[in-house]
Amino acid sequence: MFSHAARRCALALSLLTAAAATAQAPLQVEHAWARVSVPGQTSSGAFMRLTAAQALQLVGASSPVAGHVEVHEMKMDGDVMRMRPLPALALPAGQAVELRPGGLHLMLMDLKAPLQAGTRVPVTLLLRDASGGEQRLPLELPVSARAPAGAPAAGGHHHKH
Ligand SMILES: [Cu+2]
Image 1 (spheres, rainbow, N blue to C red):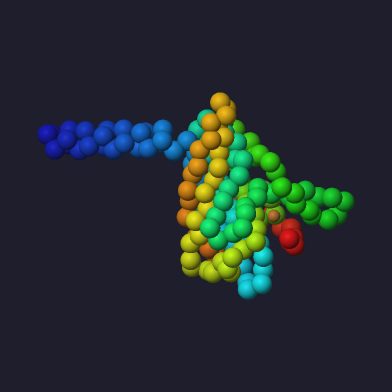
Image 2 (image 1 turned 120 degrees about the vertical axis):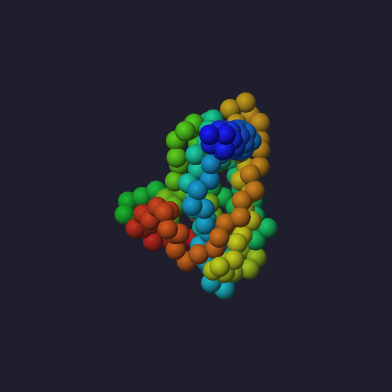
């Protein structure tokens, strides 16, 4: 009986810890990955699912492996898929926003070296909250040729940068 109560107490404590961690990380990031690049390729995409606890905007990103990083969206222009940079991507509270091949994505531009499968690349997200405060969220993205298990599949559109 006693040990059962003690276990329940330990569980309650770990839930509290989890709640505290959530309060410090207002953005949930899932299935993050970056696509491999071949030598000579100047840019590559990074993808993830973002769910903000409170409304946030993704206003930029940076990475030591890229000259600069842009938030891109894909849009059909007639029958041609084109992408354009977004100055800010809204992340509504509690709503998952998918960055995936063929859709919204982070573009790692001016790559300094090829992204190799099996490695990880640091990418820092720059976020702005409703009161205008900015915060940085450092991530480590696994580099892969394709979306990891559980990540949304490609939208079916191939594009060139
Ligand atoms: Cu792009």
